[in-house]
Length: 303
Image (tube, rainbow, N blue to C red; front, side, top):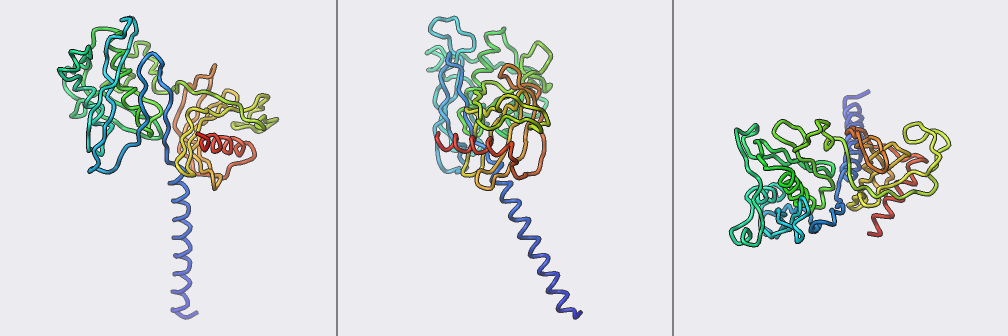
């Protein structure tokens, strides 16, 4: 075989490999997008959903939730929003900086409180770090946060949670202390690291499995999709599934019917517990998963 023919063959193989890799990367990249907002406790003001802007020249108003005595002076963790304006791209970090900074003098006269009192050395060089991934915002305080008791603990937790949940990329907030433990969790179980709250489950017709269910189990009841935690951006979608006590959060693609598990765990009395993150390649939805994906894609389209 001539050298020219060999080179042409190698070029053809290389071009095919590049095209295949581009298609796979595009499919996975689209399926990993996330955007979801979950309801807040009705005892406090509600955060309004916003998308984190990537345009540094576009000023925007955001809500910063701060502790304030409730009307009956009986509600622990009561917060209300105040408004701040920023052109920063790292808007989530800016928002928490404003929570830490606390109310203005005028806002203090209205009853808003400044509760975050940092003490001691930092473990990261800053007061805190914020990381948002797969719908979970993790805030870690890098210094000791001194509080006077449960009321202030609850106020800080609710202020941080509501402030971060206004962004469409956040559906859950985890708050850690400087040691990496759940903030003010006296139980020692670090429950904030392996549980998901507030999922509203809806049964999906046609998902009762006589054998070979999501994790190999026999299912006598239909599987459920978390109707309020579905996140869709174009054809990319993330959604939660309760497969008769087994929890799965999927990242998927509505058009290509691709799925990947990004979290697994258990469901007890509707509460998601003992979750762990998994790293899985995208695969074609099977006969058990297709109705779940179709239901989630349809429900998200109707929102």
